[in-house]
Length: 202
Picture 1 (cartoon, rainbow, N blue to C red):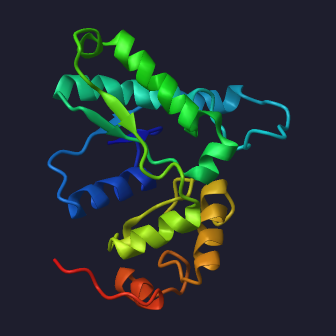
Picture 2 (tube, rainbow, N blue to C red):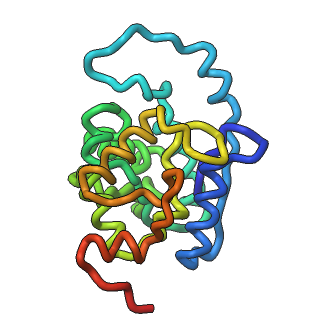
């Protein structure tokens, strides 16, 4: 599932669809939430020493509320949250305490929850840094050339937003070449070779 801010072509949404197909996901959902684009024009907070400028008002409150609705409708027991330790330090709605609070809301605010069923948000990456997430992705054979981190809706990454900057820093710290960088010819197998591993068996 991915959340889309615009009705037009969306780079992140397309990447999500490609990854879902590569992973053999049975059904992929794109949920349109265009009001977030409107919020961008309304939200002008002062500089914060604690919260990243990339913060969007209550974004994950909305995202995981939507995800919980789909989970209940589909009788799914798990919602996988993808934030990492770096995100948790900079964004209040990417922290472990936020996940715990959302799980409590789901428990008391859904029919599944009050009837004793389970819908749980889990986050297997919450203690991993961005670099550690990247290394894990390489070991698991994730097709990094299909992934997308840029916050902008472009054909190629902007290289300036928080998503691009943290992605580039992670590749540099891991000593790897980003397959999305201009001029790069690296695919997942090339990146894995640089880490000293072999290719993943089918």
